[in-house]
Amino acid sequence: MGGSGGTGSSGGASGSSGTAVKGARRPELRLPALEPFGGGELEPDGDYDGLEFREADLAGQDGGGARFMDCALTGCALDETRLQHARVLDSVLTGLRGVGTNLADATLRDVEVVDARLGGLQLHGAVLERVVVRGGKIDYLNLRAARLKDVVFESCVLVEPDFGGARLERVEFVDCVLKQVDLTAAVLKDVDLRAAAELGIGRGVDRLAGAVISPGQLIDLAPVLAAEMGIRVEG
Image 1 (cartoon, one colour):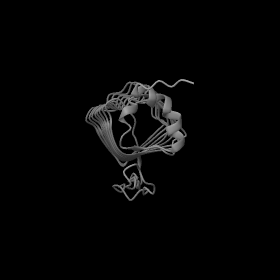
Image 2: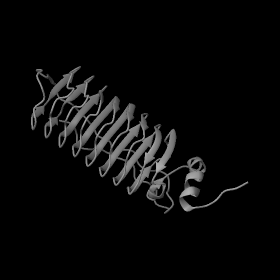
Image 3: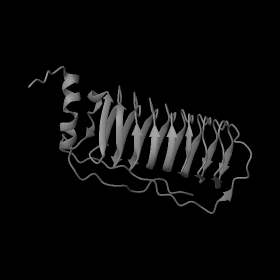
Image 4: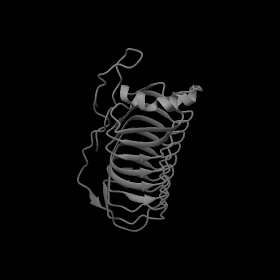
């Protein structure tokens, strides 16, 4: 069984309050020997323990409320797959692809998501704890009203991610490209954006309290901040 959250990176720099930024705790996964998934379709409220889903076509299937424990999903197709209220625990998800995957109100705990290619991923109302999203590209990620704690986005591209009304605590963005982020009504605590490769805020720049950015990012965000505050900048 995967370990439930080892020690992660420690925040070494100081934020505006003069206190160190708390780093996210990363999952420590040790998958057991896995049995191959026997095929067939996912079942609502199904229980999947210690299984390997390799190159499985799960498009259009309904696994709402299912539990995935100590599983590996590799190269699976998830177009319009319904996984509302699913629980994904101590698992590694590699090379997932699909459009319209529905993980609304799901729980992801001690999970690694590697090289995903997803569009319109629905995670609104979800709970993510000790999760690493590494590599890949996710377009129109919906995390509205979600709760993220100890989450790391690393070397990935997020196009128009929506964090509206979400709560983010100890979340890090490392070598990520963030395009037109929506932070409307979001609450941030110990969110480290300094290592983001690109940081574009579409809406909710006023919600950056609780985040740490670099001096260069502050300069890049100056026009957005000025517009938010109603400041006219003229030559």
